[in-house]
Length: 298
Image 1 (cartoon, rainbow, N blue to C red):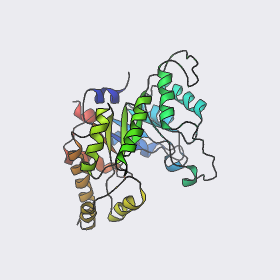
Image 2: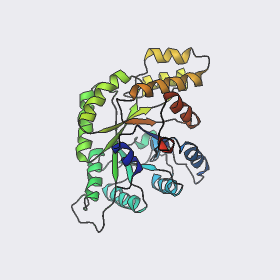
Image 3: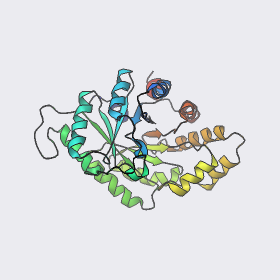
Image 4: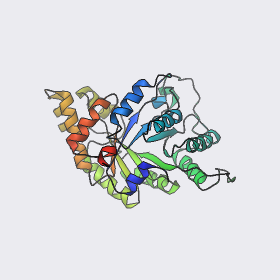
């Protein structure tokens, strides 16, 4: 399969992925600048699918343009905006354009975004959508009709190890794994000890786990994550470190790096969601002692 990400995970390397948000418009300059800056340190970049239900350029187009720059993309696909016909059509198109890594998720409801009047689709939920994608790689569509040529796809999904009922989340992960997902990017992790139990069971099932990392930019942000984002718990110790830091940026980098160090051996890599702090990703990886991407391949 033509996927450098797949090859890295199968080889057992500690993988680093990150995230880029396509623009609302056609100006790709800032996105390309971030991708080029991090290309030597990051194995692959997620291209979000109208993140937070805010309309933006198709991740398929941006993924293809990154390939033209020699950068490995991961195309996100939500079930929010397209039915099974359109989703399968897009997967065939992505493969034809050389895009092989796809990560599937439900997506935020339109009422949360900038077109609140939009009608949600949610025709296929994540496991069924993954199953449909796997079927395409086996030569048939979701209704069993034969294809003329089959796509190459490396299928991923998301998981939330910080939820209160980990067993239920593990059941959801297994359903996605059975449907055909290979790798999983998780919600942000701030408690590696809590993540360890989830990771052990998920990896026993055969899942490749990329633990989520979101740098804590401020005490206010840490409190927001605690209060508003399901499955995220920022421990009081980390809240205090950020609140009392002389240099918040330096402390945030240190916390993210410490977390990554603790995750090595528990996860197969990390998924860094920098949220505007892409400039600090190299410092985080250096502080964590992670050599990956092209830099790690010599």
